[in-house]
Length: 495
Image 1 (cartoon, rainbow, N blue to C red):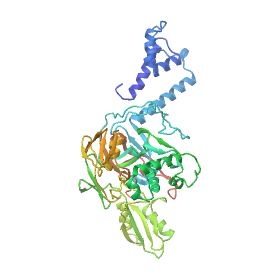
Image 2 (spheres, one colour):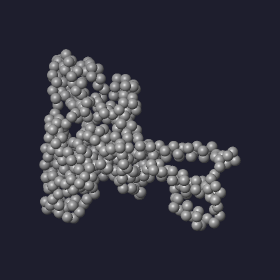
Image 3 (cartoon, rainbow, N blue to C red):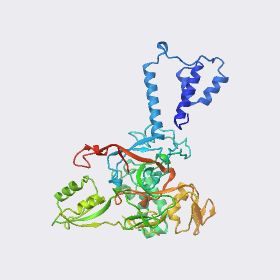
Image 4 (spheres, helix red, strand yellow):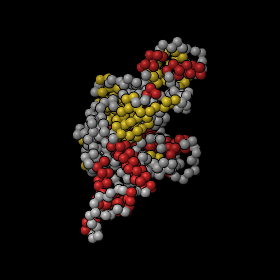
């Protein structure tokens, strides 16, 4: 009874046993006692004159349960028990993308501890068992929104620590495009792309982003936007509507990244190296950076690629890319150990570190805070203060883009800018005090990861749990030459 979640199940069982002790043993009576005890038990006490104490039910041959009832109750109990375990204790996840390689590989199956930071109470508790946000085989929501609970986290073993591998709900996943083929895109990036297309260029868009975003949103709803057609390769041209889905916090997509910035830190990235409070941060053991490799040959061949993959154990769909066929130039992400190995290969004549200093990518502002006032890039980013609960920052038109989503969306204030002045909940403000802690997360595959450098902070109420160990791992033939179980990664702790 002291275990949250389990105590609710036990209370349901106790209520059922109570009405059975007063002779009410039909299926209807038991369901009412379990689901509506505030109706059934007072009725039993004050309205049902025929109810009398007969004692607990004794199961003998005469009162043996039917086959269907016995299996039905067993299945219900199993579903409830499994739901309690995955909600409050531990849950299995899989790694679908290479953003955390080589720390975590595509095809790794993880157990994530909900108890490490304290389990969140479900915010949309009325939902289909074992489904996250969509019913299997459909595009229908697997939850109902007419009953919601506020955010509350149970006590845990500790707090998020620097360099933890954290599972969290994608902050920008509060809004997604309705078409299944487009739901993997960041809606806000998609919206910005379309708004810049409407404006004609970034300069025009930056003069009035609200107006162009409103036009772009209407186009996304109608499904006739240019980027929609490009993204789905024209398969849905002519469809009258597309639609937008708004998802509650706990039903947004689950992501996993490494926590590199803690509340109260001043974070920056200088030439690809992470800095915290002005000092270079320690890099994870399996951190990957991208490099250009100059191949010592007149012309690149498939043999060179195959040999490089074999030497470095690279998957077929790794981010190994031919930059110039004639010049023999490749681009690939490598750990420090792989980099040392590459330098010993006789067919590699030069290794050149890659730096992503592009300020504008594909005609849109891609790097956080996605504002033309900031010329940051993935490898030269910040400095940026990471909000800590109770701390305050000065806000003006220059700093507002950094914290606008926190103030307006994550912490639920009414934010408005009028005549160059900032109003929060109707009052002019020049500073803001944060109500929650925030974190900055990045992928270990630094040049192949969409992380906080692109979409900003992760609020504490979005944190799901800590990745603790890999219980299974399998590479498939689509990504590798052969499909096999990675026995060496079984029951390996996540570092």
